[in-house]
Length: 243
Image (tube, rainbow, N blue to C red; front, side):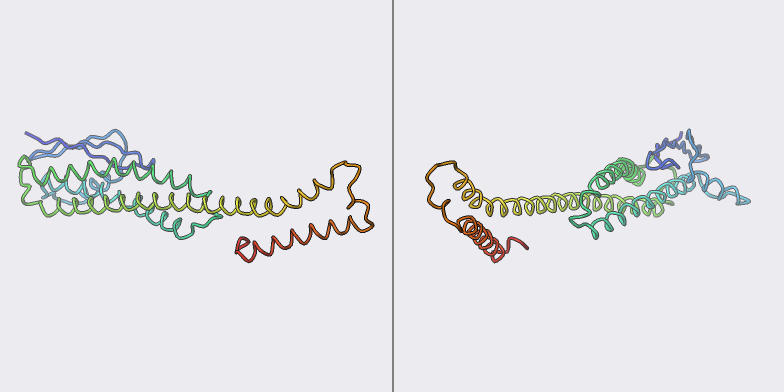
């Protein structure tokens, strides 16, 4: 009899997984895949360079899986470093430009997660299965791959948490920015409120308004408005509203 394994490897087109099927018996191993895969090519090249193949089919299967899993690390490390750089440089000026990028990264992490977790579970089943001939002789090798997959899973989860933290930081920065805008608008609205009131009172078209008859009424009104506006600005500055 033979065992049938379904693996998922990354190809040259990014994070889209390609299925690789392995048929393993105690005497042979057959791989089946529709597209070119670098991991498979590396294994066959290594085996082809040997004058005599002494490895068992299960050891060859381990080598194939190991190469596939090794290819998982590059995108995971890249995303981790990229997210750390975004997090370190996140400011109010750059927040808007990185939010869409963070959501794209989170989508890539979901793709990685959907590929890596089934592989992790597959290795667990291999290690705890009695169907594989000679598994005890290769247990240490498969455990090593399983440990790599556990590490990858932890890295992905940590990166997903970091995307959530960056998203929360963006909303906090955006909220802070909007609060500053509203505060500025409130200050100027408050300053102009009494000035508008004064201008409105003396802009009424009543026939008898004693103040309008004075020689310096216009200048007194302007001075009053300037004092009120300046006093309110000084008070707001003292309260720290312009910081």
